[in-house]
Length: 569
Image (cartoon, one colour):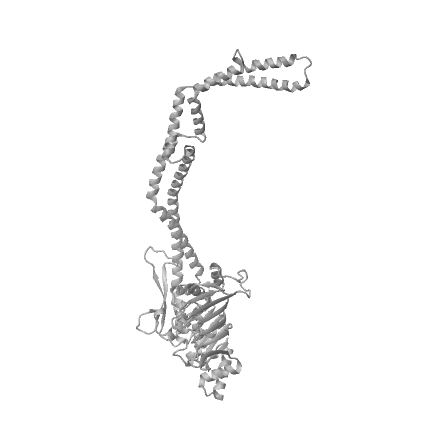
């Protein structure tokens, strides 16, 4: 609810700070004192359009700040969290005293307007969005949620007890929309998928036919190089074998044998030569082993020209496909695997199309079942809501006025997030006239009373904690004024109601009373607000009853009205 409103340099106000309480609060004062100033300042804080002529004379800017207690407004706390404005908000404890929100609006002479939520810059749209969850102002068509169709739908669903069913319907619609969008995207690219699949299939057939194994290219290239140099390899290998063991004039094996024989036959061989002897022995063994390896190579080496030709043909095929796919030859195997995966993905997408269509059909069936049940529930509740609100019309001197929650079916085969129909409240204020939307009601006072009747019925399930009625008593008096006061007091028991009124019957029903006055100081006019208690309040009610000349009779009458209102349940 609204706890504090601070106004600086706004119209007739230089500086004003007003604290508000739970229940019904009446704002009274003489004509022209500035009672509607509070309503206008609130509307500015909540993002409504503000003209520079609202800035106090001889000042550069106007400023309005409104503090709200969010402890019982979880939807507002959620909005702050979703939009990163939740500084200082305790989301774990809705009863925490720190669950306050500050809305601030600045307006300069140059026409610049700035908004803030909890000290952070905010757009006017953000102020309005948050404001719709905090306060509903019933004043000459301004800042009134009851003028919006989505509010009509919410009120009807709340009255029908179908908010859970409405949420289920909306969730099913959202699921259906997401899956359907995926399906449409796949279908829109189906021709591209077919062409892509055919190309991949052709490319894969070539690579499958090639049958290149991982690491095969290195082996082929090494073998090709070997066979290409077969003649020189054989000549060099024979020379090596001669040098190791087969040359008659000189070979390593024979020379090592002679050296070892000399060391073996040496008399009194020095100890320093023993190490040399061991090394020569090792060398002899290794030369023998090298000779055997060379001989094995010569025996197994096949310099087949046909094999070389086959190798070169396969390498040529590999290089050609690598160029075709614009990859290095060593990456051709990886390219083959990538194309396989791409083809599998396309096949999977084609399979997904079938599955998605099944999901779309199933979700549509579930949605229609839920939406039709919602329509049935709404239709039944609409008649009950009409009857209840028309009863309020009778109490508010609007006998004969007709109320109808008009349900317009959506076009055939069209699914909507909120069901199979749109909902709009229609009013027939005079017999013979066609029903009209609330937004087209010409009289502001008439609209306020209509809104009051609706709110009285809807308040039980309303999520908006603060209601503001600006001169809802226009054009009424007598017993009807008593009824208006009682209705507003009833609403005040459930939340917070601010009411600008000229009628003592309405003011007397308030739990709290604010008096607005206008004065002149140093040739400057300004408005002030004062909280009235006890005698002061009785005096103000008496003034509203009898004018400036308050008599004992009007004082007694005023006292009686306040006492009667206080005794109401």
